[in-house]
Image 1 (cartoon, rainbow, N blue to C red):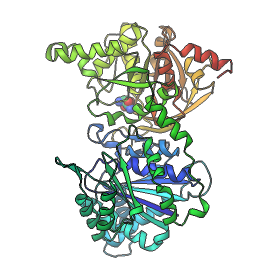
Image 2: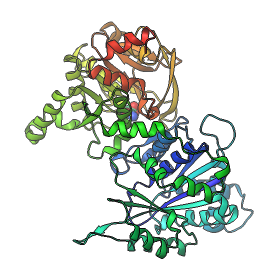
Image 3: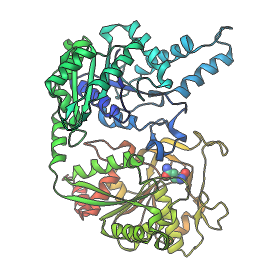
Image 4: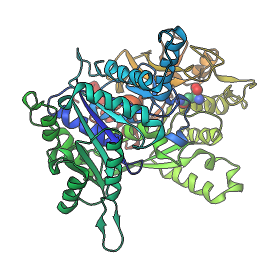
Length: 562
Ligand code: GLN
């Protein structure tokens, strides 16, 4: 196994994840099999209990792992399926060490950070790196390890030490360290400043790790003189100073690396030149360039709770992007804070209320993504009602599907008090209820999580056609509440159709409203499996419907002429 470690210095938010996954893309383009590990030095065991307001979206894996959103980047960029163990946290490591200690596995020894915690980290990395993630058998050739945080953080120290030991044991040929840093430009002179990078490399070296490559983030391309200075002061060969300057979209980054021959230098370092091919990045190039030149856009109203931080819905945004690109459209996402649509906001914040409704009316389609808690729910119900009554294409994901059910029960069935027991535990008309697969009392990891099968109930529905007439789909879930099986009958009599159910037939997975051009709710999260070049069927459906192309597309597809 060859390891490529990516660390970060100077400031956080440098795009270390995108840099690391782009390195993976370039190596994969050279014919190598690539896997990845993300290390998050925080104490949480996983991202499951972390607020999207603070940390961005919680990404969900096939195996139900609730992980850092960077793993989503790896899955999308490398087209792999990762496991929960590909995300290491301090919490997980300590949990495993403490379990061993309780079992008496340390044979009476004093249990210490070095060597016990560092050994646990090394073992974890060595074990997980060989799990195949690309559908093929046997371990990958290269494992890209991204160390979260910034070098020098107290909580990353045990990881740095473990990685230093790993480097020492596997040797120079099998380990390559790429340090991502920032080159700011200051003052009127506009000089590219190398000092922060020098300091952070010094910090890394003091901890026993010397970077072989620098990946320098900058606004403009680095000057030759800046590179030279970095090389001299940071002890890195000048051919190994990579520059990631600002680009129009992130798909350019693998191309930027390839243009600087980063792949060749890394392959040389890892002694892999003889097995690699020249990088094949035609599709990437096409996609990156197509995106830059898109002229027409489609307006999508995203009505959610966490709209202040777009990373909260990162995979939804990416899935919209994949679907739009497939139709040569630029996505124009209009964020609407659901609470701004509510009646009360017309009194408390009238301007925001007016603006939110204007945005909703101007959009070509409405998307209500997943969410937890009752904030903004009334606004989401209004958005769902508006879309249903005005034939505006609607896609409700997870909470968005539950919203569609509550709205329909209230408006069409006349059950004014219909609600989810998540928002009103004592509602007289519980149309959405708690249906756990696991414990009712513990919050962490008790949800219905990960890949579950949905059986399509009929080929005669939009969803089945969009999914290419498959009889089933496997999509990822993250929820506790579900449509109450007891109200399915009356909802269907009134016109809703549950066209996708789980294998037991008790859990409603997909709803459609046949009297509407595109009104679809799904209990799962199709965004997590969308890939560039392979957009999610439902997002594609939404975009097709928003641009009046759905019927023609489905007809073509049914005729086999697509
Ligand atoms: N809060 C809802 C539930 O737990 C929806 C979850 C979600 O949208 N991810 O079922």
